[in-house]
Length: 248
Image 1 (cartoon, rainbow, N blue to C red):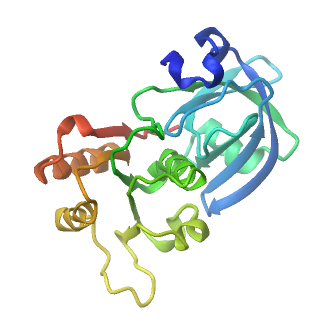
Image 2: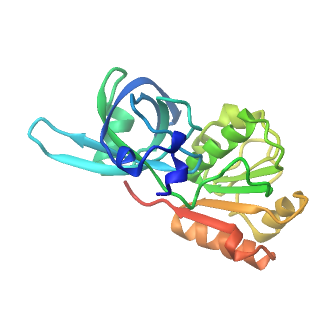
Image 3: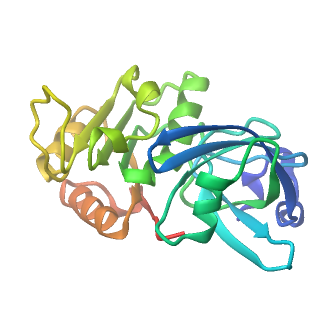
């Protein structure tokens, strides 16, 4: 992790400390995903695209750790995570179905220096998410809007069905958002369910005034297919940043 990623130039040693995170709010995003709003005194700050590590410890001393993307820009001690329930995932099951407002656990971070967006970067933004891969990209979208940033931005989200779309209400009112459904489209949709295609990506890229910096996040197969398609469309591979999500 780069030192520059930390607010106020705080040291890496500070970022590596375990901090207490108390749940101050929680809301369902989909039937299998939940956003937790955490109060983390001493949080050193973060950049959109970074993630943190959650550590749960049981009374008998057993502990488990998992990494989760941060869904919001830096906002002092408040940090939001959106966690997808993974079958047989002991940490995700607790965070999605077990933890309650007022409960506390430990977090450490932020982590990640490559898959981040800095507002001073003038390049247009192309964000492509597969399913829960939207979480770190939503932090970029929210920071872009908070700053009224001038860079053109296009967001493409691929989900199986309308019920699987995170932040649906917030995205519905935003410009530059394309949602594709792979298995079931909403009633009245003019697009039949199908995977995100290269021509659809090309149409989005064409709406940007110059070559964008692309951020692609999702399952490994999705990320590789999108990254290959973007390079085939002429994007510089160095401008295509990827992050893959695995089971947690």
